[in-house]
Every structure is written in structure tokens, then in C-alpha cells.
Length: 145
Ligand SMILES: [Zn+2]
Image 1 (cartoon, rainbow, N blue to C red):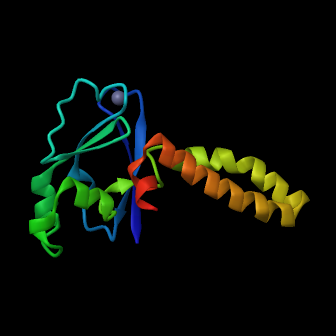
Image 2 (image 1 turned 90 degrees about the vertical axis):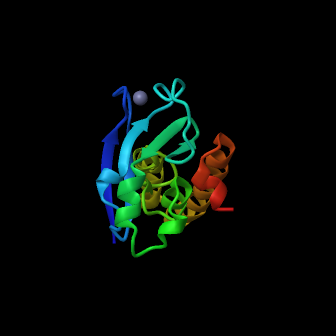
């Protein structure tokens, strides 16, 4: 079971949706979120932050270690939280669930008029989308390799 949570970045320009695998981590594990507009001035602290294509998530590592006691506390790092899905984007990137719905709208129309073609197009869309996201440099798109 995953819980979704949306959060605004520090400058307020953007927001991102997060997913919390198995509800191990509380929402408070996210200390701050920086979008590509407000991240450039931030010095990356690898002990608590992870960077993904211009976005920075700053974790509260005390919360993470406390909430993660039944995991393996020694291995709890920002990468671990993000890559294992305990606190990660909902989807491949911060606004993925919004973008992919929009991108899919045309396909949905096609599904009504031509179901067979729809399946072909849908597969193509999925593959092209992942390679585009990988080119853009999103961490979770690279992982999917
Ligand atoms: Zn921002």
C-alpha cells in the first residue's frame, strides 16, 4: 500500500507528488523540496539530500532513521529512501502523474475508435516515453533499465 502526498517546493513555483512505500516513512521525512528554480543556490548535502534533474529533496534523516528502524537503519541514506520507494516521486518524475494523464488523453480517444490500433500506440507511447525521460536524465527512468 502506498500513500500519495503532494508538496510545494521552497519558492512555491512547483509542487511534486510523492509516494511512500508501505507507509514506512511519514510525510515529515521530507524536510524541504527544491524545484529547478529554487535549487541552484542550494549546496547539495549528500548526507540528507538527493538531486534529480534539477530537483532536490532534502530529507529529515533523524525522522528517516527513527521511522526506518524495522528496515536496516545502517543503510538508510537519501538514495535508499528514494530508490527503494520509501519516499520517492509518484511516477518517474515530480509531475509525472499529471503529464502522463494529459499525454494519454489522445490515446484514450483512440481506444474508443480503434481498440487494436490503440494497443499498438499505447505500447509505443510507453516505450518512447521512458526513453525520453531517460534522455532527460530522470533518476527513476535510468533505474528502469
Ligand atoms: Zn521552487
